[in-house]
Amino acid sequence: MKSISRIPLSCCVLSTLILGSFSQAAQADEKIALLTSWYAQAEQGGYYQALATGLYKRYGLDVSIQSGGPQINGMQLLLSKRADVIIGYDLQLLESVQRGFQAKAIAAPFQYDPQGLLTHASVTSLDGLKDKTILVSSSGQSTWWPWLRARYQLSDAQVRPYTFNIQPFVADENVAQQAYVSSEVFQAQKAGVKSNFFLFSEHGYPPYGGILITRPDLISSRKDAMAKFVHASMEGWVSYLQNPAPGNALIKKDNPKMTDDLLAWGVEQIKAHHLIDGGDATTQGWGTMTQARWQKTRDFMVSAKLLNADTDWKQAYTTEFVEHMQVKP
Image (cartoon, rainbow, N blue to C red):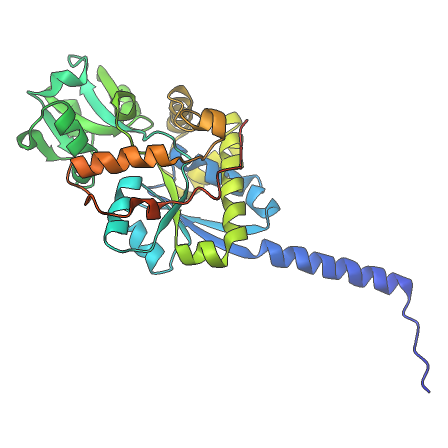
């Protein structure tokens, strides 16, 4: 009978360490491709922060971030499996669900939409828009514009296209335009224009801001990874609003046109308007979603004829990843 050679203890220890390291590396190789809704800026700061500070890696995730833009159809890329998670908007998601697309929201980092209207200083309330030309993008015409038009008795005849160029507003005091609190408002100030900004959510506009959307098949097949991604992303937002420097460095790398002063302005406005820590997030944790909020958005869309009343709107989201997360500073 052959004798069995005794393996040195040091080799056993080394093998254990190697296997342990291999196991950790395998977990860290859980790839998630995130597609944002726009060029890199403060509104995506939490995700860049989670990447820059190693939060994703600590959760065993290998996250890549791809910037969106005006010519990029995030929902199309998600459904064609070229992205695992996209940053989108509840109105577009509900409309997609109506059309039978398989997509579902898993978290709402922005409790309020950063969208609003930029006016000249002579307009002191949204009631003062009836004689103004209003610049609206193509996406705005099927989202916030029907709400604004109905609430303030405005007319489609007032609308002109918004081409993401602030110069028409700067040149004409009779013009108002759509704006994000973190970008165009800053541009107007830099241009020396005395202006006012009205955040739609502070006047009753119900949708969330940028929500995280994935496919139901990924929720089923990669539930643990999705849960980790949501949790790490919200921890990234907490970290970003405390010290945005690491995330901003990556944002500027992805978007060289982004400046330090604009990023600082964006962070300041996110905090000032409680876009992330306001609403239900105050008590239920950052990223939370509720049926009541989704129903408000659904009801608005039905009343504006943007959504059929019989659409199964509850298929557009799941709260399973945020119900007990309780991420807060």
